Structures are given as structure tokens and as C-alpha cells.
Length: 458
Image 1 (cartoon, one colour):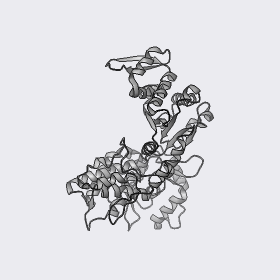
Image 2 (tube, helix red, strand yellow):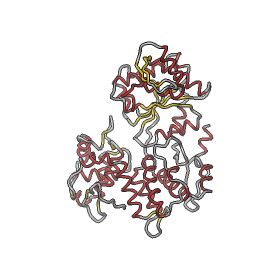
Image 3 (cartoon, rainbow, N blue to C red):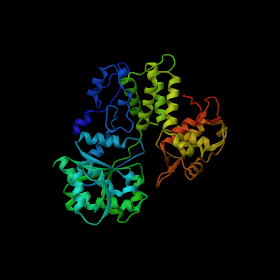
Image 4 (tube, one colour):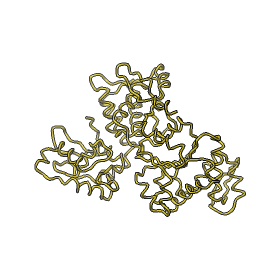
């Protein structure tokens, strides 16, 4: 399995033939698709934001995949963390498919309404609702669950112990997986319960139960998926924190795509699979790729969404993209997908236009910065490059400026624990800053666009 995976190394698009290298994952499938007229393919089958399945748009990240693959057969449980939309689910589904892992998922975002025990009951009901009804009928005191009896429309409330539901779920998962196939129970959205001590303790109880021989014999791994990079800090606040933390292994952060990976993604989807072209003399493929990467911030979910918007917008023009068409598509996507974060950005901006609005200059520099993490040295370098006249002979005190931004009532950046670097609180903030802050190349005046203004694509 390891040798097979390693042979599907980097996937590149040859600019001369627009054919994918045979080493690319899904190369056979893409080859079949390329024999069909790309212009007839539905864009929604190529770009699938929040899709349930892995298609040929998957971008391999071998270091992360290898680490997850190494952890699966081990006795400890696994944590996958990274910013929202960066492909955590994409990653584990691909690795699980490659390694034949049987898995079930539970969304911890719903734990506040029904508890973790209720989530386990839901997962079990999807496997075997009849068995859930039976155990509910026979077991005693515990947590009340409102369930639908198999084959009946009427709702009935039962009282079931957590261990009872959990053990039966493990038993059913092992039965479906078979005796030798690896199996995992995936808890998505761990960040939703980290401030809920009761829910964290409930989850801790499940992990500790898996040390018990009656539960461990099923050999089911727990996988925790979260956007919280400091999840260990939250877990350390509950009792027996070391007992819990010592039972998990952490896959390195699932971050944004690299520049090369992002370029491959756009070229593969728009040009190879959908046959989208550009208007000669108006724009180029490289320019189009640059704009998608700039506004999506190399975040897979946003790349799916923006590329889908571009593809659908281009339908009326025979799938030919112009600068004007791309401007409309980007505007529609920004306004439709990330408008909810506009207050966070506007509350941190100075007045409309200024040469020396230092806070706006810092935000503009943060928006330009291509790194996930940054410190005052990186940001000051960008500020001085972009505003040389305004900065000449001036002490900028960028360190204090970043600290103030992090301490703002609605913070756009946060300081990393035990360090001097910062990162964006939400990647949508960076995208909106790129949208709203505008500087003419020949001027150091930084302007703020109204959110409903048209966007200029450089």
C-alpha cells in the first residue's frame, strides 16, 4: 500500500498538451473524462465544495497523508486540525479510501442539543435502528434519548447509559468492517465543545473506556477533527488532562495548499476538465489562475466555490473568460460566501482614504502576506516596500500595532501561544481585506472600497 501511494507522486498539468501526467491520482478517471468533450461536463461534478465524495480534483499532500496512514494501525487516537476549509475531511476520506478504513462520523456541532451520547445513538441508528430500539427497551438509568422506533413514525424517549450505546456502536462497526479491516469513529468539529467542560468530560470518558478490554477488543480508533490549533490548551483544563492528551497523536496542521498545488488545482479543473478558455488579448490563463489563488487564499473549499462560480458564469459565453466576466464572478462569490465577516473587517479600518493610516497599512500588509503565520519583521518589510515615502525615516512600531489588532474587540489576528508570531483568526478576513483595501501602483494612498463597490483585478 505504501509503495502504491508513493507512486502517485506530484500531479502536474502540461501546458503544451493540457494532459495530466499519468502519475496523478485519479489519472485513469481524468483520462476517461478527457475523451469526452469537456465543454459538456457539468461544472458541479468537478468543483464540489463540501462534497461527500473525493473526485479527481483531490490534491495529494503526501507528508500529511503518510503521517495519518502511519497512525491508523497504532493504539492511540488521532487529531486532525487546521483552519476551516483547508481540507481536513478531504484528507482523511482519501487516506481512509486508500487504506480501506471503515469509518462512521459524528458531528460535535450538534452535541449542545443532544449530548455526545445522543450523537452516538444517531450513528448507531444509521447502522441498525432495530438494535438501538432493543437496547433502549432493556437498559436502565442514564441519559434520556428521544429516538424513532424502527418502522414507526411516533417518537419515543428512552433512558440509556452512555457505555451501552457506545459498546453496541463499536460492536456494530466491527461487525460491518470485518475482523481485520481497520475502523475509525470520526468526531468532526471538536472546537464546538471545547468551551463546554461537561461535553469535553463526556468525550474524555469515551477515550478512557477504550482502554477497557471490553471496549478495546473492537479495535476502533477515535479521530478528532477540529479547527482549533490550541486544542491541547482546552483539553488541559479538564480533569486528568494528561491522561487524555497522552492517548492522542496529532497529525501536523492541515494548512492551505502550496502555490504549486493551488495552480495545479485551478488548471486541472477549469482548463483540463471543463475546457474553459480565456479571451485572447484580454487576459491569459496565468492571470486567471493568479486571481483565483489571490481571492481564495489557496484554501481548498474557497477554491472549489470560486472556480464553480467562474465556470457557471462563463456558460453564457461558451466557457470563455474575460476580465469583465471574472470580475463579476469574483464579486458574486465574495458577496455570496463571505459577507458574514464584513463587520469584523470594517470595525478595524481607519477612514476612507489616507497616506499615513498606519492601521490600514498594517492590514494591507497582512492581506498581502502569503504565509499562514507572520511576525512584525515580515509585516514591517511589506509596509516599507508598499509605502516607502510614508515610512522613510519613521519608526513604525509594527510590533505594537499587531498587538493592538490582536487585542481589538473584534480581532482579525491572534497571537500564537508561546511565541511572537500571529495568524489570521478567519481566512475570510484576509480575503475581505484584499477585496476592500486598494492602492494604486503609482500612489501610496490606500483607499477603502465600500463592500458593494466593484472590485478591480490587478
